[in-house]
Image (cartoon, rainbow, N blue to C red; front, side, top):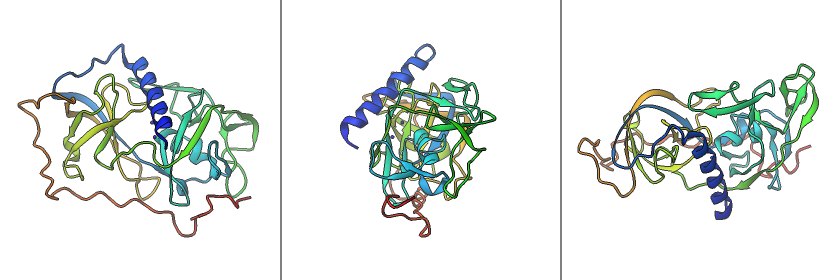
Length: 284
């Protein structure tokens, strides 16, 4: 889900293929403007590296060392698609590899219409160690392990990362959708966000393997702290206007664009004590 144009296109096609396969049996594409009920609305953002505690490891595809949990955990770049490094620069996952996700016990976790099958995702299906108790564990930046010493390493072939954001998304104006239900390029109105920068209006510009059916993901600035997370709204009623279609008679009001909406929160910057302009090149 998040460079050079060729890599961005490849990532989008992979995500599209996965999403269409998973949702084709239940989703029917929206062909004219109207309201959609029973929608789940979540949020995503570029993950800041300074939230993470793992040891710095070589980053596939980049000449930098990065915190391992920032790269591969379910709260890092592998899930969010994009991240902000300790150097303040933007990065993204460019190659998804051949694996999916695993739980804390290293068991497969697969996204579906009703959530994750097999348990909540914790880590990419590789790039981690298993402890003697068979829990996923990883080395910490300050020494030691997250969940007991690692006994067996699981490879993660094919995953790579790139510089810059994956796509030209805009905070509180872009939304990720299941393109088999909501066509890319659609205008989407979410009443719960009517005081945000876009006045509640978004453009469907992104996809994600976990965004299936009546589920949209709002692109926002990162929270001030990792424990805040993003909102999770259920049973929402949203308005969708596919590209090239006329607005419905009962469509919501267009954003005035006169500055009445609440400005987007500023993007958090790396704390000075953690900033690493070298990108980790000098780390042990």
